[in-house]
Image 1 (cartoon, rainbow, N blue to C red):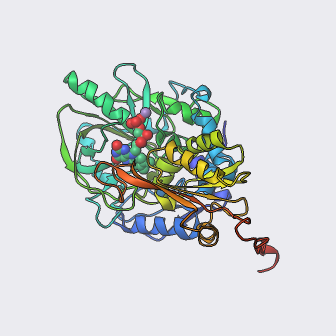
Image 2: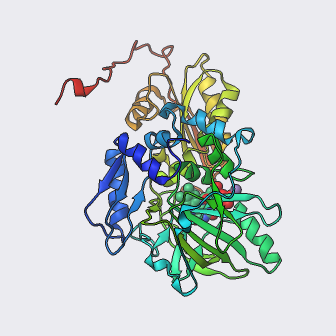
Image 3: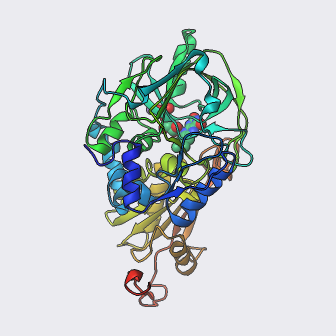
Amino acid sequence: MSAIHDLRSFLAVLDSANLLAHVITPCSLVHEIADVAAAITRRQGKAALFEHPNAAAWPVFAGAVANRHLAAVALQCLPEDIPHTMGCVLDPGNGIPPQRDATAVWKANVHTGSEIDVRRLPIPTHGVHDGGPFITGGVTVTRDPVTGRGNLSYNRMQVLGPHTLGFNVNEWRHVMQFYKVQESRGAPLEVAIAIGLDPAIMIAAGARYDADELFIAGAIRGAGIPVSRGVTVDIDIPAGAEIVIEGHLPPQKRAAEGPLAEFHGYYGELWQSPVLEVTAICHRDAPIFQTIIPGAAEHIYLGNVLPREPLLLHFVRHVSKNILNLHIPAYGNGFAAIVQLSKSHPGEPKNVALAAMTAHVNIKKVIVVDPDVNIYDAEDVMWALTNRVDWSCDTFIVPGSQGHEMDPTADARGVHTKIGIDATYKPERRDYGERIRYPDVDLNRYVT
Ligand SMILES: Cc1cc2nc3c(=O)[nH]c(=O)nc-3n(C[C@H](O)[C@H](O)[C@H](O)COP(=O)(O)O)c2cc1C
Ligand SMILES: [Mn+2]
């Protein structure tokens, strides 16, 4: 069995890598947990386990894959190899199907009927302008009502009552496609929410994939993910989940939910969304609740970085054999990409930038740098922008191109301007020789 196969084994591996902060101080579920988790990720680069949230019996875990070091632990690869590893596991030919009829730890405690009250779960209110408590770190498990295949996704869920959650889903999601089929039949769509998971399942759920995303999680672990049939729904649910919420979305029913901190760095708006009527809450003994701080790094990593770096890499490698690596930094909210190129021709960086910005509609800013620039270090990228770019000839813009309709610089239809920047050294213009470099050292050998 893989060293990581559920949330607890992941926490143990994070602990041994000194990548987990244990917060013993009691913290409020309202804003404080989100502030502390975001600060821990930002300043210490770690995930956070809140052992004693105020007014809650269960611990809360946040920031599972909030940066590339955490993601590399989750994927069990080197940080530099993440785009390649993600490319392999997203290849449909490498998918591994789930193992059915496993023993589910979450069946230890099953609450149905009048025992159901989602308000007893430690669901945080994250951002100051969020509309209330939201489940953001639960993975939605559904089944295609036509083909019967499984599906994973993220859907923010606002607590609206003891057994009611507002269920956000965009028009073009698989889940919406399933819901519409059921609505046309006058029938509900069954849904299960799995909370507290092996990060392989979290990473898989953020990807756009034509088959069951559990196949991606299986490919990450090199073995089928164990699943178990729901208690009140006909869905195969990851057997190692800490907590499972089961229910259905009744047809033709909508309720207001929102706003919530969004991936683009601002608050979203109120939506009229389907409503999840809860039919069961199940959990293992002494479970750990898991959350994703909305609009912060982990949200961007799962939705915009991990699934798209391999896609962009594929496109840029198509136009150049000299690509060394590529990164979609979380601080660019999934709109920017940095490509490292060992250029052989003066025009090559611009071709590479063109390729990257056509690989995914969200990408609007591509910076191409040399091998001596650290693509993971914003300061180093800024150095290249400042010292290697003549803005009048090393950039090009594509006005009127298509972007994401929530891009803060785009109009309501998502029409925006893309920019490509050749931030490589042009010694033929003026030769400065080699760049100053003081190589990094292991400070533990020098400072106590
Ligand atoms: C943390 C996180 C939260 C998300 N929240 C939502 C959401 O509330 N509504 C939505 O439609 N998509 C949301 N998404 C995006 C979808 O979950 C994601 O695109 C997924 O691939 C959709 O899968 P599907 O097409 O199989 O339904 C979120 C993504 C992440 C990473
Ligand atoms: Mn899907």
